[in-house]
Length: 76
Length: 260
Image (tube, rainbow over all chains, first blue to last red; front, side, top):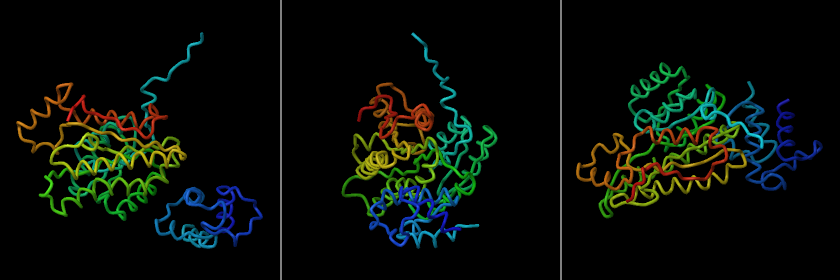
């Protein structure tokens, strides 16, 4: 469930297809995931999960997999 | 020719249900900004390092006089962990932020060759790192607002310089530089970033100014009067409100035409 919600944000923010290979979603490697997009991604995740991420979480969020693990800590 | 109706200025100043963080707001210009924003219905987050009872008293005044919700956050904004905690507290209580006023600052004059490293570091920490920390901590919350506004309080000294104020002037010039860059960076998220550069304003900060220096400064003001904290606060209201929806990356002098 968390993974689906996180992926929905990735799709919306990066404007990628819904069948995108999630294993290829890495910061500064995927063509849509640069520093500006990263902040938009963080804002999107914070809105989706109604939370505020720590600076460390933002800086460490370098892949889709890590993003899912991070957001699992923000689910009530 | 049709006449386009213009909303009443009072409506454009209306800040009902919005939330503003004002750093360094237990007294002086900071409290006056908080008071003027609260007078337009804005909920307020007060901040100060010391004198918690003064901040609590200020909060109670705003609640009683204007019926707004007030949160008190204590701590030094030059510490990034403090601003991160503040952002979480604001999110927890209000779930939103519309206005950030970076007012916290210190004035610690010294001539070149006579300033200690502690003096230099403390001034740069509070006056420069403070606003940068708060902009880092709060900008994502501000981005959720339909009209986010950051107001950085600089100084005429940051634009013109003054004898004995090399560090203070450098710190306030840095605030202007940070304002210009943040305005460009955050415009895409519809956050306006502007600075106010007050001149000679009547606050506790200038209470120690000798009488002859005081008169000299008054003589340098074209409007021939000292500025009041309210003069600065009303400019902050303009920048916080929908009156300035298309204004960003600007420095507004509130100095009565002062020449240094």
